[in-house]
Amino acid sequence: MPEPVAKFAVTVDLVILTVQRDVLHVLTVTRAVPPFEGRAALPGGFVHPDEPLPAAATRELSDETGLPHDAGHLEQLATYGEPGRDPRGRVITVAYLALLADPPQPAGSADWTATGPLLADPAALAFDHHRILSDGVERARAKLEYSSLAAQFCPPEFTIAQLRRIYETVWGTRLDPRNFHRKVTGTPGFVVATDHHTSSDRGRPARLYRRGPATSLHPPLLRR
Amino acid sequence: MPEPVAKFAVTVDLVILTVQRDVLHVLTVTRAVPPFEGRAALPGGFVHPDEPLPAAATRELSDETGLPHDAGHLEQLATYGEPGRDPRGRVITVAYLALLADPPQPAGSADWTATGPLLADPAALAFDHHRILSDGVERARAKLEYSSLAAQFCPPEFTIAQLRRIYETVWGTRLDPRNFHRKVTGTPGFVVATDHHTSSDRGRPARLYRRGPATSLHPPLLRR
DNA sequence: TAAATAGTGTCTATTAGACAGTATACC
DNA sequence: GGTATACTGTCTAATAGACACTATTTA
Image (cartoon, rainbow over all chains, first blue to last red; front, side):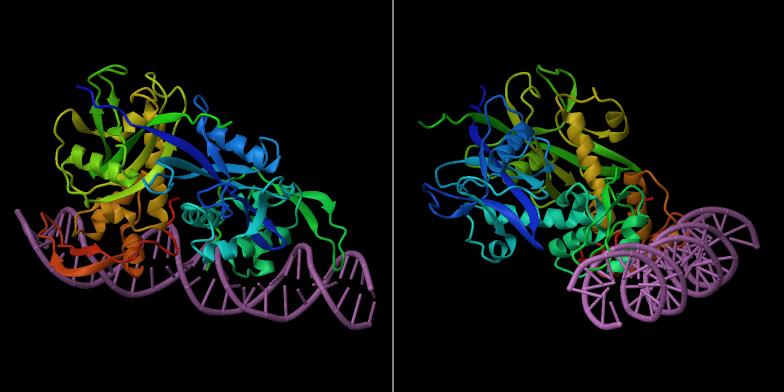
């Protein structure tokens, strides 16, 4: 006799990261209804019946940021399904991690929030979103080491110093500008030089680079 | 007006890896019913209504291998939910990756299968299990670099040569025994020496080691 | 000019890779 | 002894980290 198959509500939740003014920010929404009314939460929503999971994630990302579907980097993070994670009932959420450069100010109740205070206070976010955010930030930190992902936080053309600030911001460390420059420009395919230069406020203008074709860094750029 | 919430069947599928006779094997079951009747598939099953996802994975792992719940290493791999991935209807599967040392011969239709032919033929496995297996093997390969995970493929006491064979098998490369020995024993907490030695068939007996407390390797052990 | 930032060169300690040589078992 | 495997030591090329120096802009 066939055992009845349980069915579950499934959502996608998004950890959308960006670097603004040398601080790592995440997109949060303020909950308008219980549970956790008035509390900040990660944006997300239910998966539609015939919708692929990446499509649901892309749709939510577009809806929340107003950006086109191909903007930035998007990857699956992990799936969270503790029976008690949503007081309204069993909800399984597939979390995605997005990295954006220069996103617009979001509409509605969404806003960019510095990750620091959110990570320090496990109760700052609704549901188990503190755990999801922690996992997302740790994934981003780890991937900077062995991938060219950091360039996803930069606009299409950027300086080596801008790229270095990304690393310093996400890792919370300081890197030697000269060694960093040597390492990045010496890794084939990481960045490609353009003919353009910044019109600097002060100091010598810096050369602008674009993202190169390489996706993985070998050998990696290790954090201390 | 509230939009109706779609509900989905959710399964856990397992990529259970082990190394037998210097070949990477995965546990497969032969499907007894359509779809894909007679085809090999990854073991898995439906998540119960109030069951946490890790508990479902542990339960399936136990059921398939007969091993206790705390045996080996188990981590979440990724979630697959393409609308067409199961011809019977929409099923979302949360895949887990398990690494075992010296598992028993499984009961029923389950068996250990070499990963090589399965990876070479995208149609050898049912559903989208080729993709899941590929992702699992790649995850294992990548994690050997920067974690002490390789020791999970070894019995409680093992020689450095056994550990090296694990790396060579999973990566498909050859490693210099002397440099490997130096690197492994020189990384604090990776392995701890015991007083025991192997009673060798031939050659000098090797010292036996246990898994050390370290989980991450810094600096990593890079594959070429 | 001074100040500020960009970019290059050089030295050194560490590490990876190659491999010679020694140790200890079984036959 | 011969052979096989375990383990240690040494050399070298490459790399990471530290930092001096030059280049090019604004004020």
